[in-house]
Amino acid sequence: MATTQTHPAGPKADPDDLLGLDRQLSDEERLIRDSVRGFVRSRVLPGLEEWFEKGVFPQEMAREIGDLGLLGMHLQGYGCAGAGATSYGLACLELEAGDSGFRSFVSVQGSLSMFPIWAYGSEEQKQEWLPKMARGEVIGCFGLTEPDAGSDPGSMRTSARKAGADWVLNGNKLWITNGGIAGVAVVWARSEDGVFGFLVPRGTKGFATRDIHRKLSLRASVTSELILEDVRLPDSARLPGVRGLKGPLSCLNEARYGIVWGVMGAARACYESALEYARTRAQFGKPIGQFQLTQRKLVDMLVEIQKGTLLALHLGRLKDAGLLAPEQVSLGKLNNCREALAIAREARSILGANGITLEYPVIRHMNNLESVFTYEGTNEVHTLVLGELITGLPAYR
Figure (cartoon, rainbow, N blue to C red):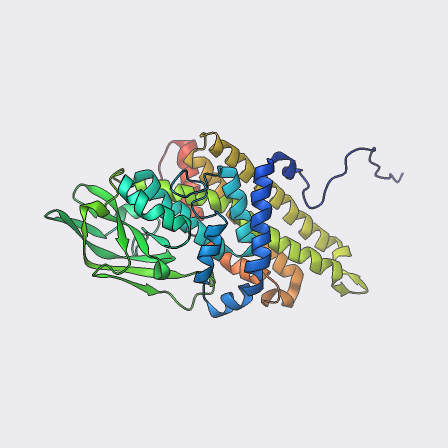
């Protein structure tokens, strides 16, 4: 006997917010989200195709982003907005819905460059750098990764040697976002007394950068090599508040948290593009969105976006309460990057041949997500972080 699906009268689900996540946000969080979304639509999206195609980041927009209060927005004092972790996450989501390069710029500036100064710097260092960086007047970068030390930062070769009252740095850092446009680099180097962070201003003798070209991912972003040849710095350039890998790893954890949110923005943009295309692209006499296979693809995308955004919101609430553990961030980064990349690929399949052109945002997001999937800890590294947590057995070596 045939049955008919009926639903009792009551609340109706919103297809754009199936789990009602908007109701879980405060008025301030919604305002920040909507402000960033409006900025992305009016100032970022119109230029993205050209920036991505040319392989450039519009450096002049740094001050506009600073004017919005997004640079170091989750830090307190020194000209920073002092927003909550959830607000910061929502900003990352909306920025990456535009492009991963813009979210990367904000992440590197706030979480990787400003955060170590804020958390481990001297009062003089904070006063000198943080207000200018919050305004976007000075751009920062984070020098940890090396040609032979990516997932294993403990094997870094960049050295810091005491020379009287000064330090002398030698080494190379690679795949450094913002490197070629940074006014100051936070460089991590190994000394006889452990790993220290140093603030290296652009123009310091012996310090140079070389941009990496011919990228097919994160093209609207500057990626560089940092070259340090007998760079002499006073001890006042050293971050005095931390020694060892705890310093750079804590910064990475801040950036990874933003990625948990950000990639859901990229996934949402791909889903929305595929949904609109499926509604209007006709084949065999009807929109392709009317075929069961296409609807299944769209539903699978929607389900993972809702789940991933709910996970990000949960981690945001934990972080706001001071309860977020690094392993929980690893879970979020592992899951959301994996699902966002799968969503981008599925969206590309719905668009068919049109999906490989910059007329649609999907291939750009898909290429970008290949980088985000890898940086700030690869999929494999976060798997091993969680594997050690549940077994008690480290598997790195």
